[in-house]
Length: 175
Image (cartoon, rainbow, N blue to C red; front, side, top):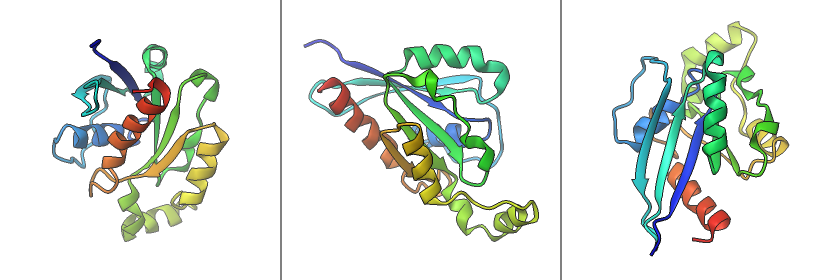
C-alpha cells in the first residue's frame, strides 16, 4: 500500500496564536510569552486505513517573511488561517493566494472573551472582541470550508484541528 501524505499550512499574523495551537498538538506547555516563529513543522500519522502522514507547517506571521509564506501556500493541500479574536485587523487575507485548496478559519484566544482586563483594554481603545457570527461571515466571505474558535491556553476545541484535517483528507483525497 502506498504511503499517503498530506500537508497543512497554518497562516496568520504575528501573535495570532498559531504557534500555541501547534504547541498543544505537540503536547508542549502553553506559554504567555511571545516568541516569533520563522518556521516550524510537526508530523504525525492519522489513524486512518492508510496511516496518512500529515505535516503541519507553522509559518511566520511577520510581513518580511511573505516570500517564505508563498512557498508554504504552494506546498499546502489545506490552509488554516488563524486570527486572534481580540484583534480585529487580523482578518485581512488575500484570498487569491488560496485557489483550489480548502481553507479553514480559526478564531484563536477564545479564552480572552472571559478576561475582564482584556475586555476593558479593548474598550479603552474603542474596540471589542470579534463575535462568533463575524468569524463565520469572514470564513464564508473567503470561501472557507469551515470555521471554529479555540483556546490553546484552556485547550478548548484544540481537538477540532485534527478532526478537521481528517475530514478534509477524506473529502479531498478520498482516504
